[in-house]
Picture 1 (cartoon, helix red, strand yellow):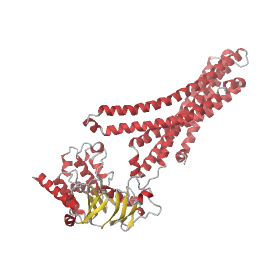
Picture 2 (tube, helix red, strand yellow):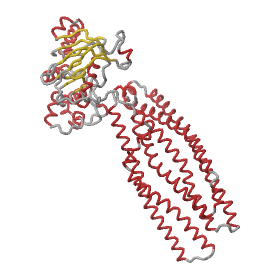
Picture 3 (tube, rainbow, N blue to C red):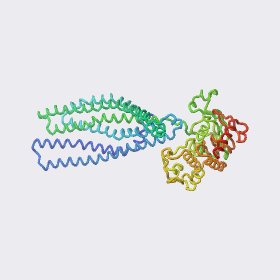
Picture 4 (cartoon, rainbow, N blue to C red):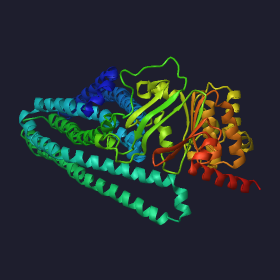
Length: 591
């Protein structure tokens, strides 16, 4: 679809405000055109010595009254038209944010945060400017320009034609420069995205930069991005710097023509001195519409480039979405089954890759079952595909082949909102918002009772930590929880999951960053609640899964062993050796 179609719903929604704003703007333009006529009458009367102080005061009051009306109507057109541009800005930003939230994680694997930030700020600001002041400039260029030319023609047609000689040059110049402006605005916006991402990334990683004393290199990299942004802006400025002076040159040529030819006709008595002064005033009035042609071209090209960039995101379809035939189950119990599931992050959609048995996948032909109330442990060396299994269950990614069933229903046939609402997920790297501990646990769910919150906090062994903090639950954790330790952040993520009353609990290395004693207490609570939920635990610490009803051992994306803890100690060399080594390590730390 054309990018301009994005604006249509917002403009239709605000059509009343646009109409009222245009009426106010037209009133301002008409009132501005009356003032030169009053000046003409005054000048003619003065040159004829046919005016007294009272009549002069009357004309002055006329102009003062018109100025007051212009001020009033100007207030209203700014209120309505600029208000519409702000509403469109709000609507587009909300639409963009809503759409980005629906996009699949694979999209964010490829797109930088800085790009999205630039779209949501700078691009939408340019669209707002193109709509608000763009409407004003176009209206003035058409109405004010045409009416001023009509008044000028009424005074003297020949002189008006001479004044309009530069107009074709303005049209040609606008057409010539507009395409070049559009391309260079697009390049500027792209460079701004790069610069925004570079700044965001270095602020987020400032501690690493300081720890490795890479300030100079970081500054050099940012200087390069900044220089590229400046160079692209300078290329744009060369176009704008040529375009606007040309528009002013054409306007001044018109003024020079009026002074010479109009003054000559005044000397010969063809037009009156009042007409001459009024004509000059009208030339001054059409100078703005002539300049507005250039300015509005500038605004529209910048807005069009930004709108194209926004539209490119909005036209990106999420890879994970609800089918038209997706169903809402009466209740999700939590029986999970993997049937010959294979997955690859990069080549999943290529049929030759998906069906090539010789090609290694992140996961290859994974099959297992977990019944409601049971616990499944997943272990294996790093990179075996353990976390990927957890990511597939809430459909953060879709399988390449095979099926994942929940309660005997393919998860691709279940509505996404219901599927994900039935799952509590603790990722391997917990993410915290720059808010309070309370808000990071509740995630804006204000309906949770305080006692329920305390129960979840106690289960995550977080209660003593919160008590030791001066502000308790209201402690601001900083960006990504910077004021907390890794273990504290992990326990907040656990409390967040325990708080959610979901039939399925997915835990990715839930005690990797806590000490042995705290880890044992957390595992104890998990064991107590497993009969209520279907629980899948990925862990490098085998003691966290030793109680599980079934444990699978992964290696290179394949299941190489499965069974209970006792069975694996007998049948799996990897599991038995790893468990014994960790047992020795735990005993050493306990001494």
